[in-house]
Length: 158
Image (tube, rainbow, N blue to C red; front, side, top):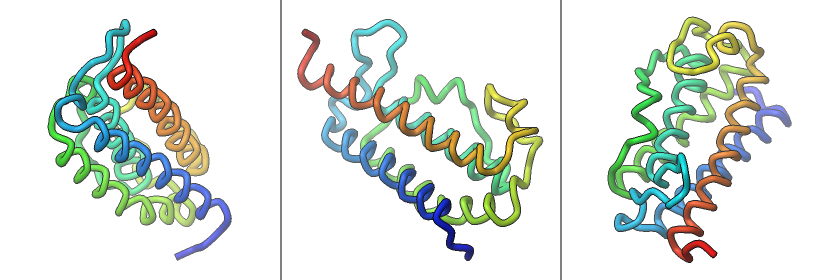
């Protein structure tokens, strides 16, 4: 496998985001992980992390890896379940990230016809490096959303 500074940075940043997300859902426990904060348009912590797993499987597995992993993006935002199920999903996708990053940096995206994103023009035209940075951006954005949701659910508003 190719080892470059970019590869190392991408893998570490994805791992850091997933590790932080996992810690938050474990902290919330089954009793709060499916609770939607009292904010307009908010999602439950479960849905936020489930969406991130779906996003990673789409960009990493389907577009970059060519695996054609089915995705129902809309249902990700209403998904519910247990912390254990979410931990398993995080562990599964985390174990596959290294292979997807390797493919991105050595071969480039394998399936530019993959469907399951609101950014289909980016699927067909962007570089593999852009896709990896997009993954990090999305994970980081949603980690912030998850942290805020946790704070509201644990400490309340105001």
